[in-house]
Amino acid sequence: MEDKNKTAGLKHKKEDPIYEIDLFDILMDNIPDTIYFKDTEPRFTKINKAQARLLGVDNPEDAIGKTDFDYFTKEHASNAYKDEQGLFIKGEPVISKPERIKAADDQFRWVTTTKVPIKNKAGKIVGLVGISRDITRLKQAEERQVQLLKELESANTELNEIVKNVIVSPQNIEITLVKEARSILHC
Image (cartoon, rainbow, N blue to C red; front, side):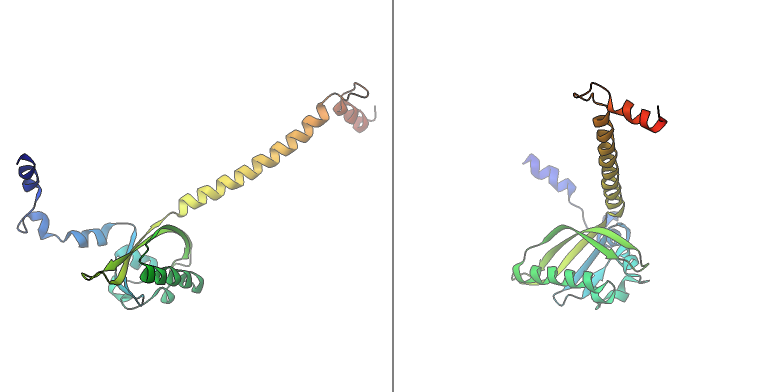
């Protein structure tokens, strides 16, 4: 009985001030991740403001009825279409898939994309909802890390070559590096 009393206090009535504001619209207008809904064609049926900025449209409604082919490179749009058709046929979501996209500002970005099916009451897939998060800075940091690792490996190889030349030669007990220095100095 005590648990019911706790949850009863958490339920809000439509007259509560929080419900004077549409929570869904707050999410769609303010979250920095792109959110989009598509039908099975797959045409946009609703997008948030972040997705509108990515697509280069002034108003989210301007994208309604359009597809990825209207906004992205053919390669990206084709891959997205293939993923979405698989989702519509098998009902399997796409979870955190890294994608390289070209935005409306002609800049390439990296995002992770999650898409899940939308089903009607009969269980039939009627569309999808997707959300993408910009991970460009993370990918740039990863690329820089790979570059630094290559530089470190190269420096390590050079250091190993130097160390090989510093080791005492067992044939003549003379340090090879000293020999090279004498030949350079003509001593």
